[in-house]
Image (cartoon, rainbow, N blue to C red; front, side, top):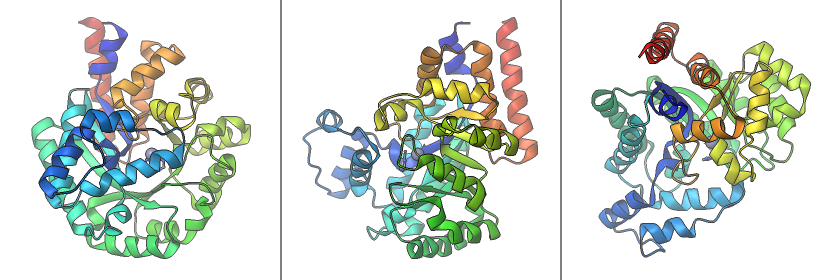
Amino acid sequence: MDIETVIRSIPKAELHLHIEGTLEPELKFELAATNGVELPYGSADEMRAAYDFDDLSSFLAQYYEGMSVLLHEADFHALAMAYFERVAAQGLVYVEMFFDPQAHTSREVAFDTVIGGLRRAQHDAADRFGIRSQLIMCFLRDHSVESALATLEHAAAYREWIIGVGLDSDERGNPPVKFRDVFAAAREQGYRLTMHCDVDQQDTTVHIRQCLDDIGVERIDHGSNAIEDEDLVAELVQRGVGLTNCPISNSYISGDTKAREIRALHEQGVLVTVNSDDPAYFPGYVGDNLAVLQREADLSRDEIVQFVRNAFIISWLDEREREAYLERVDAWVAASETG
Ligand code: ADE
Ligand code: ZN
């Protein structure tokens, strides 16, 4: 079996996926027509051609602008179903997906509308595609601590639908410690914890250090700049804190996939995973990201399998489910070697 077929077919998990970042221009146009929202482009192709970002803030401006078409429960359902359908074709079997409630409640779209549509899609995707999924609620780090606390309070009614909390949006001037109390409260309530440390941001290694020492995260989203500091690498390894990397996203945000850094972190024993981040904007879903990393870092088939296994290992599945997925991967690998 050639390596491209391995990448497409092996059962995979994704741990770093913003569901709002899967909104492809075609669906944007469909929803805009249904909801009577005007878009500043004549067609989906024109919109895609106009995407113009080369760093985090220029990406985020278009990411938030795109959400204007998401108004009703059915829109969030359609958004997530389009994602599930696409990744079912790339061998995805499990996903932990971020959603950004404040990006919707700040537009007068109710929390219940957002999570209701996503939740219904999660059930439908399990039935239709056999994809299991869990939700991670992200706080927007460029909003206030009070707004994050209010969002956490709001989420209490849906506590059992949300596995963990994360931190995303514009990192500049918004360090992890700004949200220390929010994350402490979330931990008290039993949420799992992760945070973004986007690639090549100002003070990024300081932020990674804060994630470990001040917040006590279990994972870091991106975080590949840890390679610049051997103490950070040692700590990630020792604590088993994994990194959710996104090569195609990196190539837009920092002009480099960071394949070399990802490979080096992996070789030094960090639990690194490969993910897609915002695939409608950084074109490429989970299999595409693995393929890019394989080519650029010249990964062997065994290394691909290790990256895939890592995602299940650092997932927030319970032990029994995690083992079942790992056995499924191992069985697939064994069958592919004999077949
Ligand atoms: N929101 C959506 N995608 C993001 C990313 N890659 N970094 C920070 N915030 C985000
Ligand atoms: Zn992200």
